[in-house]
Image (cartoon, rainbow, N blue to C red; front, side, top):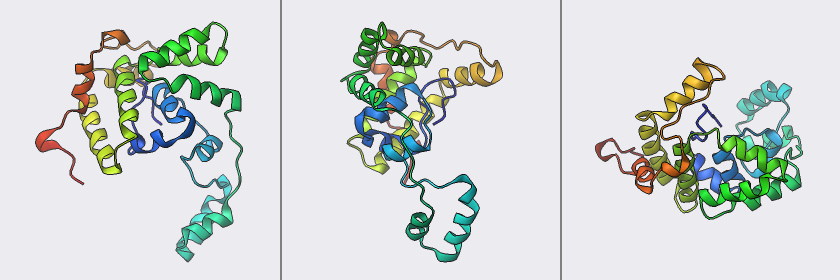
Amino acid sequence: MPEVGIGFFPDVGASHLLPDLGGSFGMYLALTGNRIRYGDALWSGLATHTIKAEDQAGFLDRLAASGDPESVLRGFFIPARRETDRPTLEAIARHFAQPSLGDVIGSLERAALTDAFAAKTLATIRTRSPTSLHVAWREISAGLTLSMDECMRMEFRILNRMLAGHDFYEGIRAAIIDKGSTPLWRPADIDKISAADVDAYFAPLGERELEL
């Protein structure tokens, strides 16, 4: 999942996939931008199979020859262990199941004094674009009740507004151009973003609406 220094900048279809991950794991990924490995992808439901890297060429050859992906996947499938341990998964479920973005942050803040995971996660979130955090929260929450087509239209609207704004390019500048520099978000305070500001990212595009 690309971070680009802003937090969650969605892969295509992420708003449809992430809400279905158990234990609020999808909301955790959306708000932190943290990357996961193949074991977590498999066990969370983002992936259906795992194979060895050295088997990729053989897998593609057999798939091209047979045209039967299910059979070929079964033949190459290698079980993978989940990388995130159970206490961490329980902490994710506890903090990221809160009913609002502010409640998620409040939950992490209360635990951060004595909990290394909460402190580290809170520090990560605080580096992200406040605007992107608000948009990501609403996007993943909305995705729970939307079809794939509706999620695609929603993501297209958000993408258009992100590309017309400041923080996406500021994140690129800080992460890629001036590597390691601190991004200057606008606004910089998560409490300075109103519901109307967030609504603007989800508003219809009129004639530019995505056609499916």
